[in-house]
Length: 275
Ligand code: F6R
Image 1 (tube, rainbow, N blue to C red):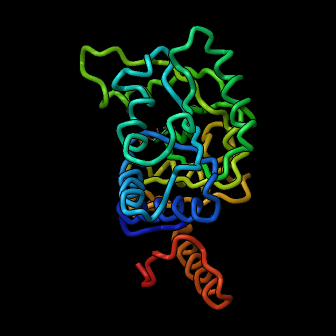
Image 2: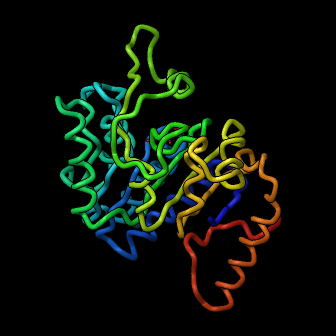
């Protein structure tokens, strides 16, 4: 796990967006795994800007989102279909048929889960998976005690997650309690994973993910098994780490080594001074 500690949330968004841009430069027909929630909003803003200025094109990319609420029509304002349209898809040059989210409004949700797995496989698999993390350590909607080998399936949300997401719903609006989510096994098959976390509310989950024991009580800890995961966090989200100084030291050495060998690691916008 490469742990990159950045000064603030804006730097995390810049780091993430640069990584996505570099992925698309290297492989314009990349398959991207996408996340929703508050954390990636600033990253998506940067990608929209990069596309508008011609720095990147999504015309050959394909995307698969992590999750969608079960029982919400895709045109519902709180659906992740609408979130993605609003924050990204409507503003970039990706063909709509290249984008996919789990079908939370289908009659046969079980078949929809199997179909989603089949479509991810048929695309050749995810090249870069973007993740956020829940305060309870969830990734996607894989709540604590999810099987570390799980595939796309229906999950019942914990009260903690329902409470965390209540801010998006009006008082009289019905909030879904179930979702379709890629499984942890599905996520771990991505070739590269980029997890972003910002703010003090994520500090405990971040330290459990990076330094805690591997286990289903913190689903994000399964990323310890993945050979190419980058965790980009701000100082606040890093504040509970026991070995924070060491990760900063490793990152500096890593950058110097890459500089000496003339290789580049994306993105190049890491702070060079000690924070
Ligand atoms: C969203 C998702 C979730 C969020 C997590 C953090 O597609 O899969 O795991 O990444 O709940 O959400 P925010 O960023 O709102 O704190």
